[in-house]
Length: 239
Ligand code: G3P
Ligand code: MG
Image 1 (cartoon, rainbow, N blue to C red):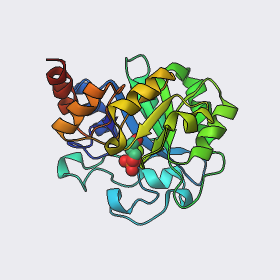
Image 2: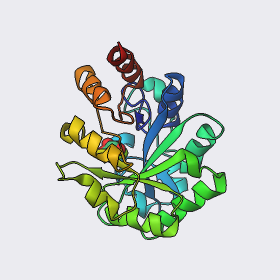
Image 3: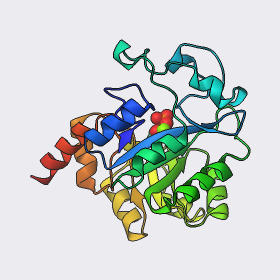
Image 4: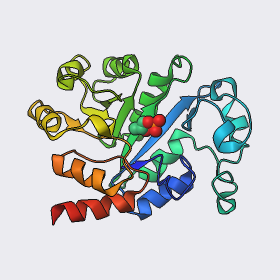
């Protein structure tokens, strides 16, 4: 699963990064979503524009049209000049009809975004892509709300610490997947989750040995900035 698209070789969370992930044969794309002042869903990791556009401004304080004026590519390389902050719909357009899974991470910045879960669910339903999307978040209240509003939409719990029997915690959300920091994922945890119908998607792994360890442990997929390295590791792990 390509983390922020193929973000090892392209500017993260741009159409260039998403298209490159498809070219590299990624099964899925992970992206991050924030809600703009005018209620649009913008694909960007940070709550502010600064790092990836070189300009100040918070996503929640700007209209989408203002965000679109910014260059989200040059910071990574001049050849990406003119890349924009995509709307969530643009990624859905790319994925629709393809064998491509979308892992949309619901961000929350300094505080939750009122109405963001409803807005994301509305887009999923409009595109009829319930089977192609999983919503993940470090904000577990947000995931619980998603399940209340749209039980048919899959969710994945993001967490970075070692949890004791995470499947027990996950059961409270009716969640489908554990998106754990890779360092806390062990074969025993993967087996325990599997016995309860839960899958692991560890994040973010860019190192071959660690990737192979997780693949051999039986995770459902790895979240990486380098989907081509991911495939290499799957091949080697199978040998
Ligand atoms: O989905 C895993 C990963 O994206 C979580 O961390 O900060 O890269 O969004 P972050
Ligand atoms: Mg993310």
